[in-house]
Image (cartoon, rainbow, N blue to C red):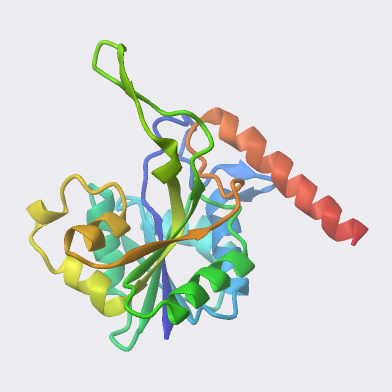
Length: 237
């Protein structure tokens, strides 16, 4: 069984949108609806757990989960004060028989069913691998900067990838990480980092650069343009 945990509990402070980014209308639908619909359309996904803002679970259910029309959503749960706490809450609702758990940012609405299925397939054929991280090589030069804004070095980008979601895990490996005490989860910027810390094997899977996360106002314009482009290609095809 393959279960997706869509983490949608963030405040979206950097976006500055009233009500948060998950319910922000993009191309006529809340961001979170686009995300849920993509996972629902992926044949490799059996069930979906949505992690909502802890004070707005009913609102998320009414404005995003129900409008998505997805019969695969088996639970909408309250998140916690941190991303790790929110993922842990989502994992608690994942059926014990799950073999694979896919964690995805609710604010990445451009994910496609094909990308989700391909990432799951990559884990399936990668013997000895605990997790697959979708991402792409870093194409920009990256500077190391101190607190004053002074550049102290230039990173070797040849070995650097920009990590995205979905991130695909063998259920046993991810559950083991989240069974650790809270302090062991501190400082991890994504779930794959926890598997890395535990000594697990994590591999990357090349995904499209347009699988962006809605974080700042400029992202909304980009997402709408990309959705319009996809719609046009579909009509022309």
